[in-house]
Amino acid sequence: LRACCDAYAGHIPMGAASNAFIGFAKRVAILEDPTSAMQWLAACKAGTGKVQA
Image 1 (cartoon, rainbow, N blue to C red):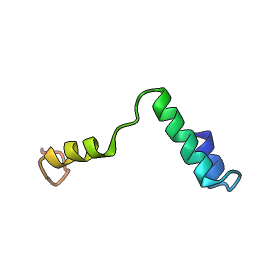
Image 2: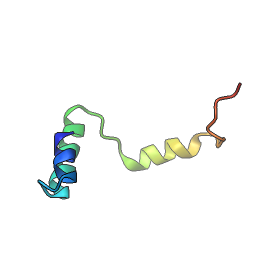
Image 3: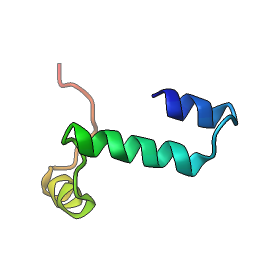
Image 4: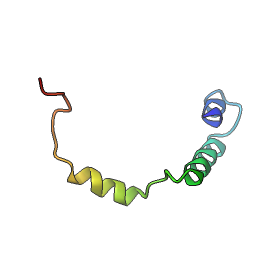
């Protein structure tokens, strides 16, 4: 998060923040393959996104 804030403030390049975030995601095993995520999203039923009363 610090790298993202530093990039937003202009203290470090955006690429450095992106690399830091990707490195973190790989380290904690939360980086998802984009194609598998898109297949998961495509399988979801479309709706309004509102909670039914």
